[in-house]
Length: 367
Ligand code: NAD
Image (tube, rainbow, N blue to C red; front, side, top):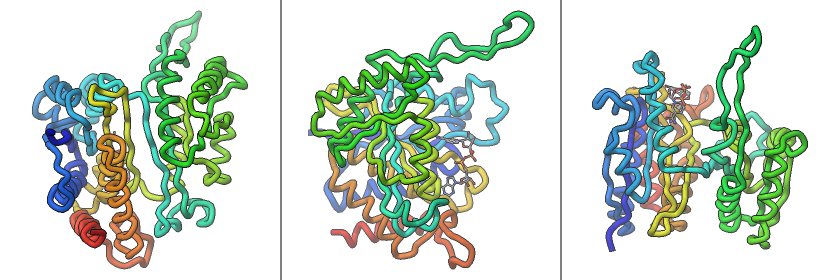
């Protein structure tokens, strides 16, 4: 049987720096676990614009459609800020998400014990926190028509439309329920059914889908209450399923409960391919961090943890994903810190490569 395939799009800024450490981890899995991937690399974002005049070449798009998973670093940077909207680096990422039809965005908010002090919340509220927000990614108010700024009478009116079909709500719900089945069998669906018809439909469809998952305990919450509960008592949640707009806000809020942007992975999944694997794009939540690019300061953990998500959700290697996450946790527990994870008087930070070294040593020690 051929090896699973992985397309690496390191992108811009610190993207290539953090991806360099992921490449070493991928190499480790080949050498030490006999887990080999057919890895190909290509350009995205500003790097693709510089080479081809477009933030995502058609050939790269075609490759992304064929591989088992895409792993992306970050896109963007000040050099591209003045480009026309149609060729901005972010358009490359948006094209990938759209054409791969990645409708289910998984954003974990996991608090490593060693970093509990970094949260803006009290340590006891976040220590051991492990929740997953599933955000519907391809529909809702960011895509609904009509949209635009229109002249109405003697003034302008800005319009966006929240629109969800049953099928869109259902496919995302199924991926959230499947996830809940792999975790603690607890799902909270968030909308605003009290004031939005789309929310009423959302609640009805999710309730209907829940009949296929009788083991999962389903609850519903208005999204504004959900925001309050996330900062009041986040550990009450396990999997949260919500729409594109609410998910955008709630997932950022939940993620920051855990401290640093340098620790946050994500996955965007679509429909299953012929081989049963979902279309998938894995990427850290952070951007290209131009302020620290080229200085060896970038924390590679978010990108490495994104690869751990790929092991779990694309390659059915849950135990190896656990191993990698445990290695990151061990390194943090040992006090190894990149600069973003340090507070005043915390000692000397390690650089990007040294963080990679430490994680590789922890992987070795796990054998
Ligand atoms: P950013 O995430 O790049 O940086 C925000 C802050 O967090 C910076 O101070 C940065 O140094 C720090 N940071 C981020 N990742 C880090 C890491 N791994 N290790 C240590 N510190 C880290 O967000 P920004 O500054 O708002 O945006 C910079 C560029 O990135 C912009 O061009 C933006 O459009 C782009 N961006 C891209 C993505 C993406 O590729 N998915 C996401 C967000 C922003």
